[in-house]
Amino acid sequence: MCGIVGIVGQEPVAARLVDALRRLEYRGYDSAGVATIHEGKLDRRRAEGKLFNLEKKLDGEQLPGLIGIAHTRWATHGVPNEANAHPHFVDGVAVVHNGIIENFSELKDELIADGAVFTSQTDTEVVAHLLAKYTREGLGHREAMLAMLNRVSGAYALVVMFEDDPGTILSARFGPPLAIGHGKGEMFLGSDAIALSPFTNEITYLVDGDVAIINHKGLEVMDYQGKPVTRKSQISQATAFMVDKGNHRHFMEKEIYEQPEIISHALGHYVDFASHTVKPTDKAIDFSKLSGLAISACGTAYLAGLVGKYWFERYARLPVEIDVASEFRYRELPLSPTQAALFISQSGETADTLASLRYSKDQGLKIGAIVNVRESTIARESDAIFPILAGPEIGVASTKAFTCQLAVLASLSIAAGRARGTVSEAEEKAMVKHLAEMPRIMSKVLNDIQPQIETLSRDLSRFKDVLYLGRGTSYPLAMEGALKLKEISYIHAEGYAAGELKHGPIALIDEHMPVIVIAPYDRFFEKTVSNMQEVAARGGKIIFITDEKGAAASKLETMATITLPNVDEIIAPMIFSLPIQLLAYHTAVFMGTDVDQPRNLAKSVTVE
Ligand code: F6R
Image (cartoon, rainbow, N blue to C red; front, side):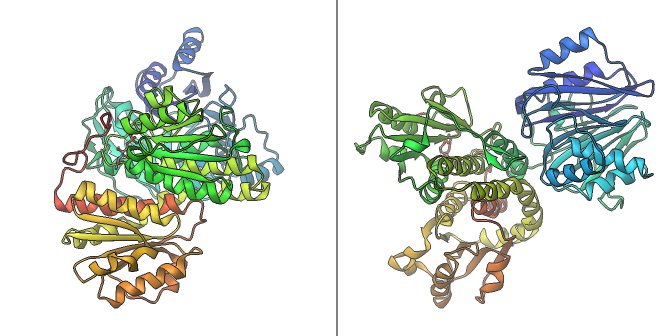
């Protein structure tokens, strides 16, 4: 994940900017850069690789200036080289960016037709060109910023300096976080409060849709129409050595809200956003030659694998054998070296998953690890590592790791489909386009549904039992919804395949047990609605999680309907994860449980 820092200072800023970037290193990066304005001129140093390389450059060629911006880049659009490193300069405009500009291809074509010359492969450069164009056309800096923001779409944190205003930094947030630091006669800006901790602990967190301007007078925040908005500052507890909750009450809440940002970086590892193709996968596993896949994992990671099974079977026509690792390891499952095995684990240390891996290895299978911790035992013992790049997950209940596992599995299943000739070039393009839209849609959904979910969670917290239902990929999601709810709110919850309702659980339906139905308007929708009817006929209370088409098509009375945007099937599981995570989170908050460390649970289960 990229890191961003900016300083409007009274003393030289370059060394302090690099120091702040160092505290963002944990986010991961592959190049870095810093820019300042000195004597009315923009200047920059950029380097591929670690900050050490940038520092070496700065030692050789100092960068004076009392104002500057800096960036650690985690490559998504374009390889990690110096030309693609930020800040990007165009005609006196400097830009750093975290996230994805989804419509950059169209904008780039338009700008090139207008005479713009691009010097990098990044999506970011379109922002600098747009700003330069609008200022050339006579707009003031803030007007140019607003005009640019109204042209770009995607999930982004953007930070901008104009050479002819060496006292101001402009920024905007839609998705990835931005924190503003208030110093004594100086102002700061960073991806999080940890980056700014040596400078100040008075922090204002921007929210999606904020445009912020910092200068020696302080902070000004407005919306995309230029209307002023008020954002209060707070005293941050962040130190350079801790992972910070930001302005969230719990790590779980923070981790839910950082998903749009995190997932764009995870995706960037697997898909090319410019050509809308999947990137080549680790050669250790050749999907084109496999007779089948075995997948194993525990808990939430297992449920991600179950969604993956639907995808691999549907898109790559690859049969998948999947089981929870505690069963897989003892089943004496006949496996063949013509199959490969995937093990999914956030921690990479889960004992049962590791034992299943070793069992599969003994059977001669090639092993792939879908892990968050690359140095973990599961990763080390695998032939191919597929990192989920979710960053540290502190809340015991897995949220962002789950959606990143899904993003990786979706990308791998498309790659496998291409390798096996079951996904056409056009289908690949369409699916990758949908994946690229996901961070923006996630940001919007998180903002839109939060108030409704909070109210609904108050009602849900009064019940003792909850049933979750879903079909297709919504079935593993139903199980994940139930798992999340029970582990942090301690409300008894079960997730069932909707079609199984009448084979038993229907006996439980009455007004004391809400039934949460996950049903996007997909090919299973009508069938799931029939199951809902069975619930309604027995006085059951329905909480309906659907999309706009589904909400319009269903005539049933519900306790609540949570309506998400219509999205493609390939991203629906990630988008529909958001309401179930928020529902569990807010219910647990109402119940007053220890959300981040629920009783009896551990983050890394290294015993059987
Ligand atoms: C639930 C949860 C657990 C883990 C499981 C596997 O929210 O977090 O069910 O998914 O313990 O852990 P990892 O992924 O570390 O192998």
